Image (cartoon, rainbow, N blue to C red; front, top):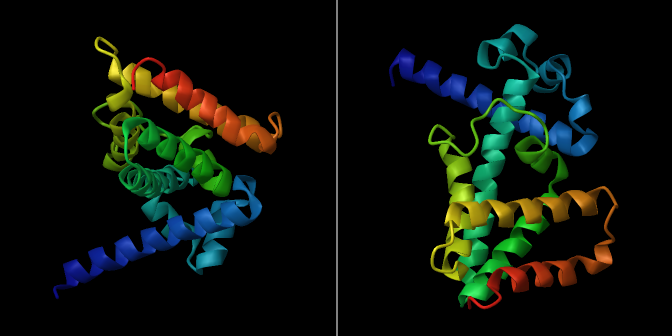
Length: 194
């Protein structure tokens, strides 16, 4: 292995370590606890080492968001592929999405609540963001009516799911009604289509 290859591998490992430490710290104590000083102490590197990889906390949070989207894409794909029938696939994806957001609140916040410097809904979006949205599209497309704008319909479905996650996490909606609300949403999206 060349010195250059070894250095690149070590750099990538340090970046993974920084991102993992940031995500774990955020999941344990919230994003306010994630500072470059605290991360440097957690991973036992100096702050200049962190800054050699990331411009600051926002860039680290963006990296966490990209990893989160990759994980979400896998969960959505697994749920979609395990269900049979268009309505069941849409329901499975909706359930997987809301479960992810409720189970991993700090990660979800990095992905969809906090401002991060990532291009969403553009061809320049990182592949994991496109993959996660693509899983939503694959669930919505089979229930779309002729003439529907599938990306717009998918964005509306996504926004509905995001609203459910956000309102339940903030205790604005009671947990007890989640399954029924999700059923109503799926029924609305599939009415007269499937």
